[in-house]
Image 1 (cartoon, one colour):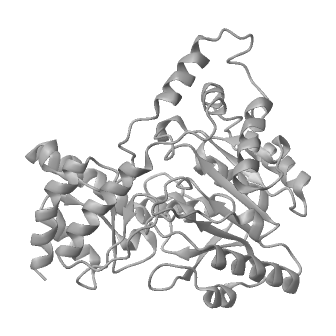
Image 2: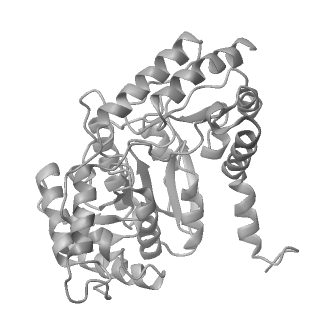
Length: 396
């Protein structure tokens, strides 16, 4: 079925749903053309502003210079065996699990990985349950593969509400999807809550007679502050799957490189792997980019300076607190998700725009009444924006 524009009706609907992010793009371009780029404070996109580590630059140059036969040829759809082994070795060391290259699939970023996993797991009408607020693209990824995204509320500080999750799970639930550190809140779920979630999913899987998979989207895994650690989902639940990318930890989002990791204790580990390898191919990814695989495979464990993001967080949070904003201090990622001083956060986002400050309404993340500030910008931009944040709040 198509609409009057000549495109699929569901896609036209998706365009409308994603319009807030598109509107922020357009509004940012308009304001910059009028006032100049330096006078516009753009906090709308989670696009890392830190440079990639020198180790990555060196590894990339080395990969380019090496003249290996078949360096740019097709490879196994799961990716280079040597790279998958490097990834598996690092995971085994960092998380204390015995995972092998057979449980790793290299992907075109975390987004590619999520689509591969959902393609493999979902039957038409299956539900993907996610705590709200959530990354807006999740609903489209579920829809891509015949699934339906359902949300479950979190606590006021955006931590997991296990009782609400228990009430939301039903016979159609196939995947429980978490994102920690979280986009848009920066919240990191505690080890205790993730363990409790694992026990709940095991109980519910036994009750309904089918596996509910725990899918953890972890592109911000290394971007945590105050000596916190992100809990390992493999220790909490056997039927766990990780998707992640190097976009944020290496500041290379445009290179589209990541991986899927399957818990080696998963009930259908081999079948899951076979299904995801096939999905990687038939979705059109074929395999993750060869050059990027060789580069990241050589520098496992490298990351940007997280302290730089912690400094940005502290500058912004102090300024917002002084101006009277209500928010939870983020434990990871590079987002703050303040409460709007008025019920309709879109009204307040527009008030910020008058101060040439671009943010994203919480409605776009399934959480009206809040708005997202992406502070992956220069310290100078944050500091110069604070008077505008204060003036906007003073209006209310």
